[in-house]
Image (tube, rainbow, N blue to C red; front, side):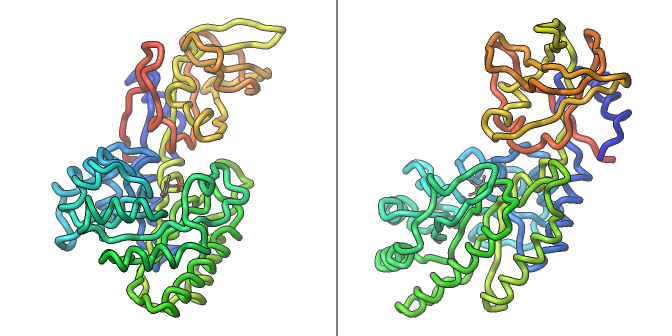
Amino acid sequence: MIALSRLQQLGKQHGTPLFVIDHDELRKNYRQFRRYLPRVQVYYAVKANPDPEIVRTLYKEGASFDVASMPEFMIVHENIKKLPAKKRQDWIWDKIIYANPTKPVDTLEKLNKYKPLVTFDNSEEIRKIKKHAPNAGLALRLKVPNTGAMVELSSKFGASPGEAVDLILEADKLGLTVEGISFHVGSQTTNFENYVQSLSLTAAIFKEAQDRGYRKMNLIDIGGGFPAPYDSSVKPFRELAAVINKEIDRLFPKDIQILAEPGRFMVASAGYAVSSVIGKAVRDGKPCYYINDGVYHTYSGVIFDHCKYPIKAFKKGSTQLSSVFGPTCDALDVVSMAENLPDLERDDLVYSVNIGAYSHASATYFNGFPPAKVVHVNR
Ligand SMILES: *Cc1c(COP(=O)(O)O)cnc(C)c1O
């Protein structure tokens, strides 16, 4: 974690609203992931925060990338091609997976020349891929339990286990190769049982595919969902990793390739927001602070990500239950109705930690207020 005095000084030096990205923390998260899940290659999910500097730092550590749109693909492609490659291959799977199961036709056409690895979960998509990106390798996205995840994904994505092998054989018949199975247990999953169930579903589908004569699958993609340490209720990563390792070793042969697509886990704790009090009022006896960042900006995760970010003051002193509002003229722009804050003055700085994922990535220009300025720090 960055020292608070440094964070405050960055706010003063660069002005607010400010979004600070700590690259030592990115490296720490990457190394922790690899240390506890040594069989799993990291494909950082770029949508959590697509900053090119983050892509470069993680690439230098050895990461690969999960992208979900053509612009994200190009951010990765353009940024890693300038860096020394560990090995060069004429396909890009060891560096990028395109993990959005539904792809526009023009995207497929652009992707085709890269021989990409793409996910799919229905027959319409198989026909689209066959026609517009016949060079692609495929991974079937499986619908798996998302019980207890902060952000649920299973209602929008994934083939049901009952139709999985039919879809694999359908792709095979058209001359496409299904390389393996992918799933996503839901974002910020603290219910580790989701991974256990998903891995055993995946193993069952591998077996059914083999029994029905399909033997080309050699990868499993265990997706994202790895929880960020937002509060003390989140169990240590090492415990989740132990559960996953045990299941992988029990269910799959040694030579299978295993990918994961952590987004939040890599960047949440590497991002800080610093903003300023621009106005204050008392409403129904409660102090209300208006700050120059809000839910249309760095705090967009309050709305889109079902996430809460405590607001803290650098200033010391006895606290009172207060409300914190964003700068726009919309009543939705409420950062929090219940923060314990000291008596703040105009221009005092406030901050939030653990705000690196799904925050600045979904900031808008609403109401004429631009997203926060970004600074990158190494400790
Ligand atoms: C968003 C997303 C991720 C990242 O999920 P996290 O919960 O942030 O780890 C990974 N894979 C896919 C396909 C996604 O859509």
